[in-house]
Length: 458
Image (cartoon, rainbow, N blue to C red):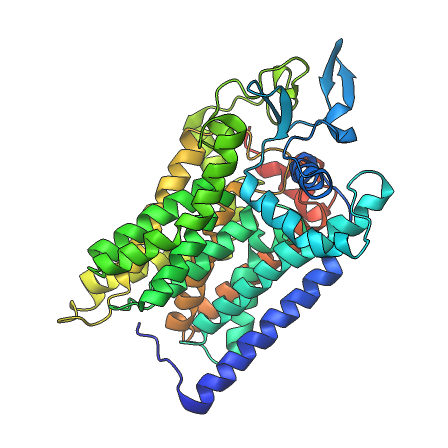
């Protein structure tokens, strides 16, 4: 299927619709963004932001959260799980990568200078937590919806384009986690926008240097915000530039533009830990007296055979295709896009667009991440949370190929019915996930989540 890009007045209408949808999402998130701290993951980030914004230091020793202890099974453990000890200076730090912390603290500075109370301890934490989450996470998510809708406008116009965007991108955990502080949704948004910047959605043969540079900057930031999907997609996008675009200049623009966020990460990490490696790669960082990781609770103490764990990440009560079944259509669309020029269409001559290469790049990166998270990472289903949040990094891309598949097959009545049904189920679970994103799936109180216990699988 070739996208039929609207031109003239129609193009203006599509851009206006995309802008309106982005604004609507931003307003929606303003209403539903959580107030306060929900779990260990966002707690660790807020503690780090508070230390940097209010005290000007990265270590978190002075936070009341870093000193609280919990007693269980005859032992005393720090209440804050996501905390590491730095033997170089004897201080405790958040285990979260530092660049997003710097950005968040920077957003708070103007408010702090105006006299706002910005502590993340006690009942007063609700307001700054809400504001910071909405201003940063919410705005990035809203822009991702805007960019997604603009791309979808190339093959589905009008209200149908709005609906398909909501049923696909809105039917994923990308939406669920956009109402809470996290690093998955901004990374996924950066990957998605870079994908469009490089013209991978339409197989563009030439990419302006400016767009290649913007994509590089975004992917450099994605790498230091969430090293898993950020780094892997950066590598595969660079390979795409080399082997499909055949542009060493484009690669240079992409690579050089990625240096500022990478440089900031390296500077902070080296000054703090004496290495540029992320905290997660430092041996012994969580091995200290009173560490939660000496006696972890479920799900961090689950040991599930790899032979079935990989399948459970896809098809269980927390599986990718159970909570977001619209992505089944996305995977089918991705595979169809790859097969078009090897089966359905003859290879285009010369420098004609061949979007199959963009799809192949996405599939390779998704497969790499799937193998890592299923066969190498811990078998804890990403901790106490809703669904497989580690897969959020590639969910928007699969959502795009679901939208493309709809455009290709919407003339088939049976396909439309299945698409709408899967989309509605996906949006329903995305909204349910918004209510309690940092709660263990087995403890999620919503009946639609509890009915999935039959699919627990272990």
